[in-house]
Amino acid sequence: MNEVKSPKKPLIYYYCIVLIVLMLFNLLAMPWLSQRRIVEVDYGSFVSMVEDGEVKQAEIQEQENRILFTKEGDNRIYKTAMVGDDRLPDRLLDAGVVFNGVEIEQTSPFLTVLLSWVLPIVIFVAIGQYMSRKLMKSAGGPNAMMFGKSNAKIYVKSSEGIKFSDVAGEDEAKDNLKEIVEYLHNPKKYQEIGASMPKGILLVGPPGTGKTMLAKAVAGEANVPFFSISGSEFVEMFVGMGASKVRDLFKQAKEKAPCIVFIDEIDAIGKKRDGQFGGNDEREQTLNQLLTEMDGFEGNTGVIILAATNRPESLDPALTRPGRFDRRVPVELPDLKGREEILKVHARKIKVADDVDFNKVARMASGASGAELANIVNEAALRAVRDGRSFATQADLEESIEVVIAGYQKKNAILTDQEKWIVAYHETGHALVAALQTHSAPVQKITIIPRTSGALGYTMQVEEGNHYLMSQEELENKIATLTGGRAAEELIFHSASTGASNDIEQATKLARAMITRYGMSDDFDMVALETVNNQYLGGDTSLACSAETAAEVDRQVVEVVKRQHAKATKLLEDNQEKLHELSKYLYEKETITGDEFMKILNR
Ligand code: ADP
Image (cartoon, rainbow, N blue to C red; front, side):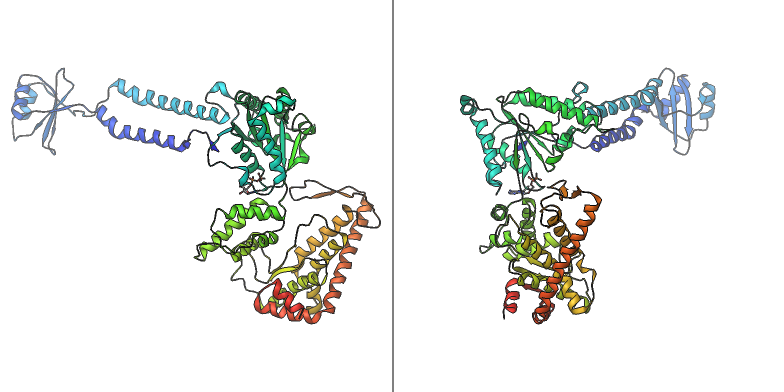
C-alpha cells in the first residue's frame, strides 16, 4: 500500500528562507539602492566647472587625496584627484562654492518609508498568512472554509503492499476478513441472495497481535481505496471539530465506495458515555456522530469499517450493537503453531541457518505476541552480525528469546561467591521442584548469568504442546515450583534473600486467581469474587466482595501458598543430594540445558 500524500517541509525551513532573503537584502540591495552614482572627472574639467559657477558643494578629502563635489541641478557626485594647487581654496571661494561634506549615502524619503515601514509590514503579513494557512491545514483543510476535514490517510494499492500471506497464524481472523474482500470483489453474489455485509468489524486483541497488519492486508487484497485514521485524531481542541471530521470522513468514503475505512484505537472516541459530571463533551459528540453516520448508510453501499482496539470492554454498547460494529473478530495471542508460522514469516526476511528448529523456538517463546516474535527474529539477526556471521543460528534465536524475556547478559555484574552459590541453589530449587512433580513442564534451560532486567538467574520451562486448560493440580504445582527457589535457600543456607520477590508476586497472583476467579476453594464454590478489568492490557482485577470475604480470601491465599511451599521444601529435603550435585554443576557451568539437568537427575 502506498500512502498518497504531498511531501511536507518543516516550518523552520520557511523561516530560514525569510531570514536569508532579509539578510541578502540588507547586505546587497540596501547599499546599492541608497548610494548615489559617482562620476570621475579630471582636475582640469573640475577647475573649469568651478570657474563656470557650476559647482554647488565641495569637500576636500586630503587623506584620500580626492575632491568630491556636486553640481547644480544634478544628483550625481563628482570625484576628481587632488593636485598640488595652492589657489584652489581661493577659486572655490570666488565661485561661491559651499564647503561641507558631500554625502555619498543618500536615501530618498520614498525609499526610507518603503524600507522602514512597508517592507516589515509586508513580511509580517506574509508570515501571518503562511502561519494561518499552516494551522488550517493541520486542522484538516487547505483553507479557512475547510476546518474540520478528516485527515485520514488514503492508501492506494501497490505491488509491495501487505497481503494475507504476510500475516501468519490468526487463521480465524483471516477467514473472517477474506469474506469482506470477497464481497468487495464481487458484491453481486451477495446482493443476489439478499445478504448484506456487516457495516463494521471490530478487531479486538492484545497489543502486537497483528490487528493493524490484518487491516492493511484487507486493503492490500481488496484493491479498493483504504482510509486509515486513528481514533485519537478525531479528538480535537475545539468542540464539534471531531464530529465534523467524522462527517467528512464518511462523505469522502461514500464518494469512493466501495472502500474500507480503518479506525485504529477506536476506544479513544468509542468509550462508554457514562454521563459523569465533567464528562468529555467533545468526545461524546464525536461518538454520537459516528453512531449516526453508521446508521446512515445502507449495508450494501460498500463502505466497510474496520476498527481495532485492545480495550473492547470500555466501548459504548451502542457502538457494538448489531447494525454498527456487528462483527467482532478476536485477534488473540498466537498458539504454538501460530508462533511457529510467525517466526517463519519473519525469518524469511533474514538469513538463517538451515537447521533452525522453529518449533523449539516457538515452544520456548510461549505467550509471546506477533510483535515480540518479530522482535526476537530481528534480535537474532543483530546478534549474528555482532558475531561477524552471515546468517542467524538456532543459538541466536534462543539467546534473543532470553534477551526479549530477561534483557541482555550483564557481563561484568560481579556477584560475590556466596551470592553466586545462593543463586545457583535458588534456580536449581525451582528446576528440581518442577522436574520432581510429574505434571510440571520439563526444564529447558537454567542460567545464573545476571541479566539487565535485574534477574540474577532464571529457569526456563517449556510446555510441550498447546495448553488451553490448567487443572487445579497443575496450578498448585506451578505455585510449588515458584516457591522452590526460596525453599532451597532456606534448606541450605537457613536464611531468606530478596531474590524471590518476583516468585512471590507470581505465586500470590496464581493462588488468588484460583480462589477468586477459578472457583477452586471449598468455601466459596463457584462465586466470582474478582472481576478482570481489561483482559488484554495487563488484566488487573478489582474485588467484588465484602470486606469480610476479602479477609477470608486473603487467609486462604496464604494457606494455598504455604501448603505448596511446604510441599516444595519436602521434595527438596528428600532429594538433597541431587540438589547439591545439580547446584554445584550449575555453579561451575553457569548455564546448563534441560538435557544435562535431566541426565544428572536420573543418574
Ligand atoms: P496491533 O495493531 O495488534 O497492536 P500490529 O499489527 O501493529 O499490532 O503488529 C505489530 C508488528 O508485529 C507487525 O508489524 C508485525 O511485524 C508483527 N506481527 C504481529 N502479528 C503478526 C502476525 N500474525 N504475523 C506476522 N507478523 C506479525
